[in-house]
Length: 413
Ligand code: NIG
Ligand code: FE
Image (cartoon, rainbow, N blue to C red):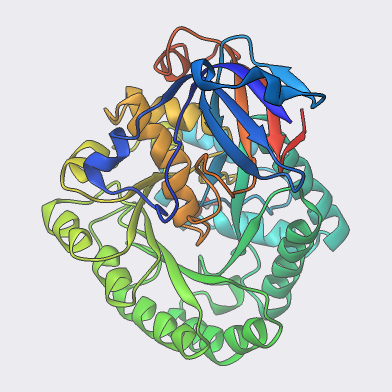
């Protein structure tokens, strides 16, 4: 199948490019006035400029006219918590009345509130709610997601969440990567006994998760008021024995040492980074760890935005993700994340797009197949409505711009 009259193809990269670092993020040349061919396997076969297209080659094939619309890869959302029960709209009022995220958590709300509800919610109901969220994200342009546990906080409930995640992976039309986040908060039964909770996590939860092969990655909420650097070190050491690599929450609420402990354990990514400063940027520069930033949480909680501009200027691989969860970012809309990356974090539109696509894919171990337009890779992309420029998308940030979505070469929407 051919797509012709494409205004520009963005994020077209060569074979072997599985992430972009620093200035590379804004240096992917668009292919303007272009065509693209999808092969019988749903992969991108080739693309090029219209002026060089031999129109006799179109033959009897299906031809889609993009009418000047652009092509961008589907978003790769590398940090979400979409499996949860109910919502936290009650705490929304506490927040409006001035309580901080930490204060709500200290009063026993927050993550523990979601855990209470999840424990009594049937697995099917959890699956259906999460599936609906995922399908909504796909309709907004997302083509790969990471999903975390972390509202279980008991062996049974964590396994329940991970089974739901596996079911999403097996049934959604996009790749799903699964992260075990037993160390999201100390479960209620262990109130005041954090070290014992970590002991239990290492002795009971982790072996069960590993034995059932339910997790691709392990996560710890390493931050002030949550888990310490020492807790994190213990958990990541234990996970490494099962060959499970970390992707951790770090430096959201304080400059907590999370970035450094993540790097020491070869984390695929360290995520949040609102309180990151030059030593953390320098440490990341000397590592392979991706700096994942979650501007939706800064927007919703009124926190500082992570220093994306400085990180890109320092040469880091920066990814942007939604952090979709009921407490700090009740939205999985990567279109908005892209816009926040530009408006609030001063990334240029092409840099922010790279952060939302290829670098997000890399932060899920999918960088060689997803998040870019390249020959041989699954044809996962969005065709936009006719737009004056790529910048128009994050600039005009509530204008609907998606015209069609292709997943594995098929017209999905
Ligand atoms: O990434 N910071 C920790 N975890 C989530 C929030 C989870 C919740 O409040 O339910 C986050 O922001
Ligand atoms: Fe998170």
